Length: 323
Ligand SMILES: Nc1nc2c(c(=O)[nH]1)N[C@H]1C(S)=C(S)[C@@H](COP(=O)(O)O)O[C@H]1N2
Ligand SMILES: [Mo]
Image (cartoon, rainbow, N blue to C red; front, top):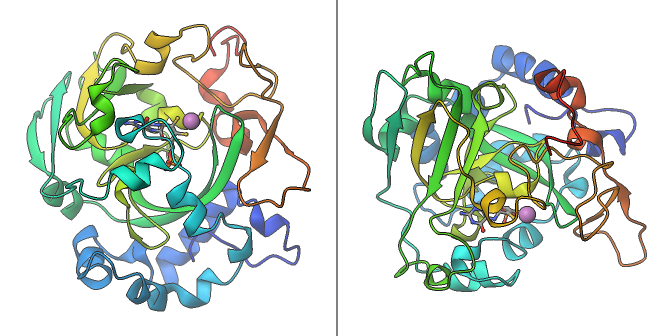
């Protein structure tokens, strides 16, 4: 696939760095006739997901590329059954169990705030302008577990630019659907619903920031945030808001849900940093979901391994203070 190089060292191939992503992607865009990256979202839909349940068709398109480091990816089963999505319950297996009747389509997204173009747009319309690609990213939850997941999505920057943010747009805020009938977890006040997350505009515009609509070559399962969720791979998992219905450009830093609920535990930035412990546990190591019970924990990497690409966003900031 576009995001993986065939390296001699099979371990290296498991930790797909972004330089490789860029190099490989560039190559791929030039030479490939079959990649997702050459398809618009609508044709991706049409070819791969004529039926929402069809993984097989997608697998055919990608089979050869998928072999490379497949054994290093978190299994589809783990990634879709060990979830955090409090709208569907607090247990790791609640989101899958309780989201089966959730309706991810039709879906629309409202764009508000400091932008020339605002309004409510059908997701299908949004997707018709975007090029889907697959990106294999490390994913690190603040709870000290991690996964490696092949997401399918499109550049967040490309999406945001279409609305022409004004010079006052310093931040972007994202909001999850509020619908307690469909999302039973919202009947309990465990968080201040709806779930809100946000990024500084330059973080949002960074080429690694991805709007996700699929994983493992199929549409997002409901428990993983269908039909639209964020993936910012150098930040803790809770930044990656699911079920997005609103995007708002703001001048002020958005009030984000986890930060508001426990400001000393969950920062607005939430950049993965092995040296900044959570007040209740250490962050230096992580448990990779799927590793055997006897495997030792893995070292957590600064910016989740994406420091080369993103450290510049935070030059001059005290990363222990702005956590
Ligand atoms: N709306 C919403 N988005 C959310 C959450 C949530 O509870 N509600 N949980 C977050 C957390 S803590 C994590 S670790 C990731 C989990 O994503 P996954 O289940 O796809 O692995 O989603 C994030 N996005
Ligand atoms: Mo998380």
